[in-house]
Amino acid sequence: MGRLELEDIRKSYGVLEVLHGISVTAEDGEFLALVGPSGCGKSTLLRTIAGLEAITSGDIRIQGTRVNDLAPRDRDIAMVFQNYALYPHMTVASNMGFALRLAGLAKSEIGQRVASAAEILDLTRYLDRKPVALSGGQRQRVAMGRAIVRAPKIFLFDEPLSNLDAKLRVQMRGEIRELQQRLATTTVYVTHDQVEAMTMADKIVVMNGGKVEQVGHPLDLYRKPANLFVATFIGSPQMNLITGRLADGYRASTLGVRPEHFDIQATSGTGAGTADDGWYGRVVAAEYLGSDTYLVVEVEGAPRLQIRTHGGLVLPVGQGVRIKPQDAFLYRFDDRGVAL
Image (tube, rainbow, N blue to C red; front, side, top):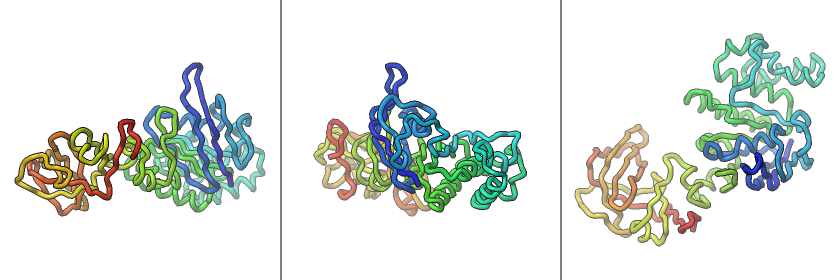
């Protein structure tokens, strides 16, 4: 397989530096997700791994071999693009075997590899069809099949699910993860969707402004965010941030509370409350999803708070409530936004 090491990767376009010393390692067979907002540099970083962009400085190693100066075809990687990049005039079989034909493999070997990949991806009955006759999910499988037949050291995925509808994205998330575990191929997966990253990855790299904010297991990032950026980027709905007097009561410049970590009860009382007895507020919006109830509560001295609670709680808009953060799940940040 392929251990991937990125050491102090920098990328500049003229005087504009877009990657600021990225150092990350993906172990053999590991699923590594690069996440962050648009423009954070994650796709640029992926393209440097693929060799589609030259780095300005630093080192890229695959299985211990420095590949900085190698052409993409010589790096033993396979990339799956956002738009699938299929040849419309070719059949599924021809698309999947195209790179193998360019590499000069025998027809029998190509046929074997394509048939094997098609069976894994449930594409056998579509091998004679052209891409126009396939659904979006099937086209994505063909793009994945084209990568699989090459048996590379590393798979690279560049936002492969962004063109699919919500239901199909959920389905394909599971299929890609199951496939990666079955093949045990090192994978680097770029997405702006933190839910995708949380559900699929062994390790997540959170990027912002061309820098790494934090690297870790999905649950570690969720439970122990290093700073305010990671705290608000990981988790949906995002963490509530409270500053001023209400945060001071908890000895923090900024207090973070995730929506599911509030105790809440209806009340007819008034007043903002204290750190000991919670805060008084009013429900200004409510969504009832069966298993969960999502509330937006307005509290004096704080921004509107998002609260997620059990589906059996029904509170009408305008209802007074007393809410209290659960002490075991409080996040405190200093005036620089660093976790305390």
